[in-house]
Length: 231
Image 1 (cartoon, one colour):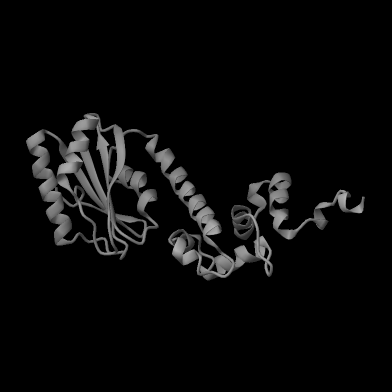
Image 2: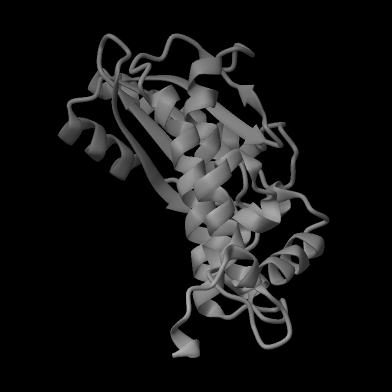
């Protein structure tokens, strides 16, 4: 029957074409909109998947970094994007962030503040709120664990010294690097940041666990307490 006849690629629905283009020409041949179309899977009654993807990117001024900062509530405001598509987009971008962090982690050893920045930055660089992370190290400064210890609002987050050192003892870590982001873009440490660093350092001395550094990350740059002689 005619309805079962084999269709050529040019007859396929436009939302399916990026998949075939990837298959035959390779992933590098696809535009950002085409890659996004594959992620969201389908369009709607008015737009193909590619057209919808172009609308999403246009809403972000075609800046993938801005798209990466959007949450589910932001994305569902875009016509044609429901929760399922929003979740797919956010999941894909988070996977990309983790992949970016993976090679740095394989260095296994932290030798300087730049190493710590490269390791942690992918976890916090696109966040619109503050998060506090700790890198747990052994005596040779090899990575034991990287952990998010606190997540807060736009202007701050809570850091519980007791829980961090409890984790350090359980992990057998002897050195720590503290890190948090400033969504505002301001790299300068606040009085609260200085107070947290001082308290953590003093607590560490009692347990023979060294706080090697405290990084503040903002706009792909960092401030190091160790480099500035503040720890």
